[in-house]
Length: 321
Image 1 (tube, one colour):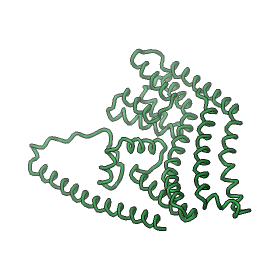
Image 2: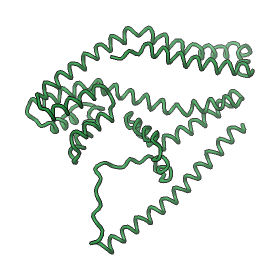
Image 3: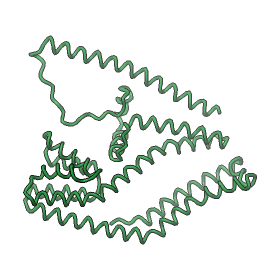
Image 4: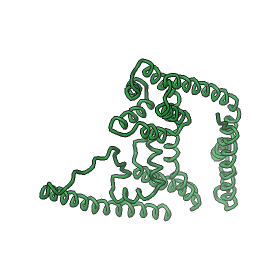
């Protein structure tokens, strides 16, 4: 209980400090904007027109002080990029706060259930990484959907080019005809080059947002064709054929590795299932595992070995195509 109270006090004090700093920064920002407007009105001829940025500045948090702090970390920028790739509509600052709240909740539950500080720290670690695991899962799921629809987008682009449309017009057709998430990415590609960004840079941004092998092949093929010339429609047809053949091989590999994946699921689910059943059927037999110090060491060792086994089996059944 003192551990949970200490965590709660820490979270409350931290949020109060950030709120106070936010109000202070907002007042400073409003005063600075007012001074700039007054100086522009008083000296209209001396003030040059501000340059309009084509790319909007990404806000990591609505709290200015927290946003300034997060911008100094490269890892937070990578986290914001991962959230955008997974189509998770949450800013990095709010996501980190969600992770902290989840850590506090899981720490309190684990501490109350286990009655030990070790369980509290384990629950806090688990609770902190659960939102990150969800965001990573959404990112992987969105990439899988993109891979399934990407050959259709390439075929649409090839047909549009063969019909005589310009490359940029074909990009707009993909954004209007193909389903998400391919439509959204190509719409952003089309809008970037429409507002003045070179097509080469817009294609590189697409490969950066969707770091898949197929997308890199597509970007490389289009950039080479624009620099050296050639039949773009034929290149896109060949690329679409290669991607579909690779999908066939991937499905065959998935069939051959089904036994390994089932083994991994069973080995990971078996120990916690047995512990839960023993707690329901014979609590006195399994209780020393949670109350005795030797039991705590066995739990830590078991979780460590389970984690190592998971990654070893996953590496065995993961075949690159």
